[in-house]
Length: 155
Image 1 (cartoon, rainbow, N blue to C red):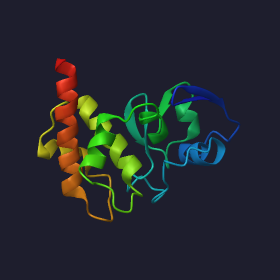
Image 2 (spheres, one colour):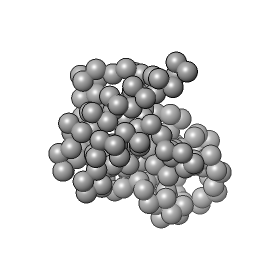
Image 3 (cartoon, rainbow, N blue to C red):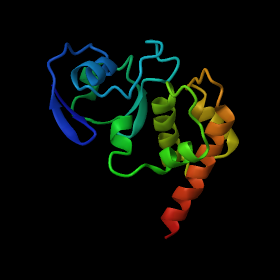
């Protein structure tokens, strides 16, 4: 199978039903995507597939063939994304384990809803768990990202 991950084509020979998470981590050495629960309940394994957030722990690798996969490593590969910058400025991470999934979910939200309300943020981020409880900072970072991205669109 050929996978396009962060703009680079990779050939993998894993069984088609192998979870995408394990191909990313074990074959391609992209370890920013985390294993959390293995049941698509926590969001730590979130990546983008053709721009939409998916839980890579339950996504068979065959579903990603011929599609564009974005991991946290590809998001800010050359310049930090506005969400990553806001995450740092707002001091969101504590333990950091959930952050790659949180960030990729936030990017997907902002791509769909450029100026989200608190309710929009809560709905979009509700499936991403943070054991450290940084939810207020996550919300603040998403609002800051929306402002930053909105200003960039106006320029």
